[in-house]
Every structure is written in structure tokens, then in C-alpha cells.
Length: 176
Image 1 (cartoon, rainbow, N blue to C red):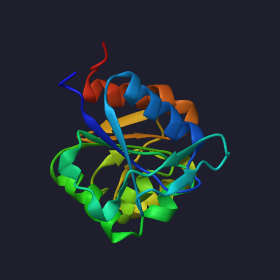
Image 2 (cartoon, rainbow, N blue to C red):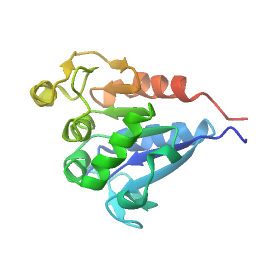
Image 3 (cartoon, helix red, strand yellow):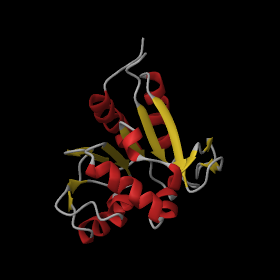
Image 4 (cartoon, one colour):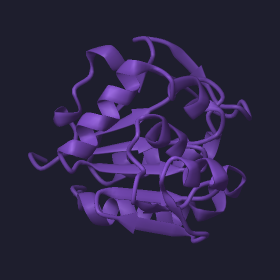
């Protein structure tokens, strides 16, 4: 199990339950170590549908992107709570500059937009924020999953299977 990779989940309250739960469980099932990063350490974070709750392991200010093989950003309202935080922005900027996989679904790309990472990048997101993505310099396309360099993006919970598969394809499987 020495090839286990650390995967960061950027999370705050009101996340889309399945967009956290399903990728989190799949990363664990595939032998990777998942670390939940939020605004504060040991914060209890609740999904917007109330089906799952997680506790943050680290505050963004204490996290280093270079410690992780991938960053996963679930959607819902969680990204709106995180996107204007300078430590969250610095974390995703560092990840992007190092070519670390960043997988963002639904409203997740709002964090990338706020961090100035979408200029000239092709991506997708929740269709309702397509204009926001274009204003941030992104080339929005309406597809199930879009891979552009180190960025993996998807639209909605219905796209989770393709989103998770694209992320696992990038990280590899380390399960027994």
C-alpha cells in the first residue's frame, strides 16, 4: 500500500451530499487517503440535503497543495463559502502551478474562477454558472466531464460516475 496517494477535498457547509460522499468513498475504496480541508480544522460540515456530515482534518491556512496528488472540489453551496478565502485560493493556485490534478464538480469551479485559474481553460460546471465561468476567462462547454491538462470538471450529480472515473484514471488504483 505504499503507492497510496493523498487526496484533498475542499469542503464547507451546504455541499452537495452525493458530490462529496461518492468521490470520497471511491477514493478510499481505491486505496487513497482522503483529507478534508476547510476554513477551520475539526469543523463539522453538513451536506445541504442532510444525508452526510464530515469533520475537517485541516484548515486551508495549514494545508500545502504539494502534499497531495489531487484536489477534489464538490459542489452545492460549499464553494461559495470557500471561494473568497485567500488561503483556499492560494492552495488551489499552488496545486495548479505544480500540475496537481484538480477535479471540480457542479459549483466547484467557482473556487477556480475566484483564484484566477480559468483563463484559456476549457471546462464545464453547473449550467447555471456558465456565464460566471466565461467571465473568469474559461471556455465553457456543456459536457458530462471535461479534462483540460490537470483540470477535471463535471456539471451535476448525474455526471458523478464519469467525474469519479476521470479522477481515478488520473490517480490510478491502489486497492488490494
